[in-house]
Image (tube, rainbow, N blue to C red; front, side, top):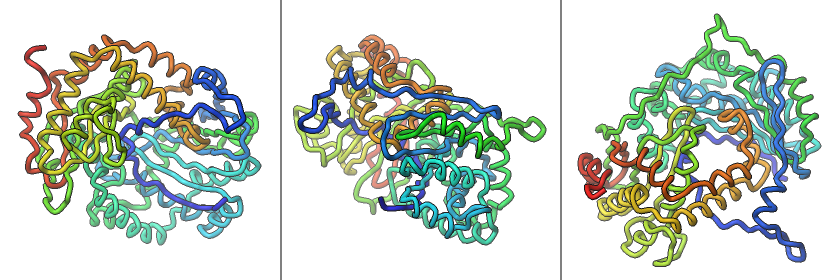
Length: 484
């Protein structure tokens, strides 16, 4: 197993829902096939234990020879201010530059000697540090993770060196027009609020070189890295009792108290349907336009989230490389093929603790922007007015396949556990998701989509050769039908 230490800097692109792929529910040749129902009923239990300091320990034991273990923290760019925006992302970089016990070289050697993979990511509400390793090395993995999170050296010289690394990564992200477009969408949808902050921080080099200090990083850790906001999650060949013992050994010292009882409280992030000037980034040098349109969606814990997920599955996704033609199940995908409307599109729903973004993102030739926007909004109106039982049945099946397919391997399962505990306080079993999906009816989809989409002011972001992007008032007028 090749060893590596890698970072995943931004999850902006993860706002897009994953592509629906077929699920193969059969074992290797010569073995009995497994039905979908059997795969749900046979899913291992997720066990949850809370330590005295409030840190939660959750695991799913599968008996594999490998495991993934990590620490999920309820902190991200939404918890940052204009002054320290980017602190969480910068800390992610610093975490792999050594701890007080293990300098960078020694840390990398420890990971390499285990044949492990150490990684991290930062999003708007979550930060995660995790390691995939052999089951027998679980104790060492937990020890290293505890050092990375609790004892990051934050050496001044290393901080200065990492500024240039972060600037280069910012430049790379700015060349990824999908991430730029979705960042701009958040900036206009939640303008003036913390959800509008970029995960990576401002792109200005002066901002990184002059403003963000070592003390900012220390203050961020002291403010947010608290035990009740942490989940030690593991999946694979792990014993829950062993994991709880390791957590007590390495994380019992994590503080659960705030200085002066100053517990950070998230301020509401108000959605603003608009198209401010900054989100039209016209550049005719680019070959394709990247467009995103969204309305306010449901929060992670909202009961409306499942019908909205089914609605998105009905719209579906398309990419020029997929193949297919006039027999594609998604009406929007059929139009994209038959009329050559776009290179790709994706319906997405990004959910946060108290709000969300429900939208469609597409990449199109400059001559097809107007038509693609028209048919995208038309797909929304169909959800609100004319969705049928066959549409919903197809959407339910596609959503089930997507949910099961995303949990293929110990790392995505571990990530699912960590995020669920932070979002819901428990891991929602796949069987429960399945039952909630089955309960969705056409009327439910129409009612929920009317609630979130019909006659709402959308937020719009566009990058590239976007001269033909319709005027905002015209896009707003397409959010309702007079005959409804």
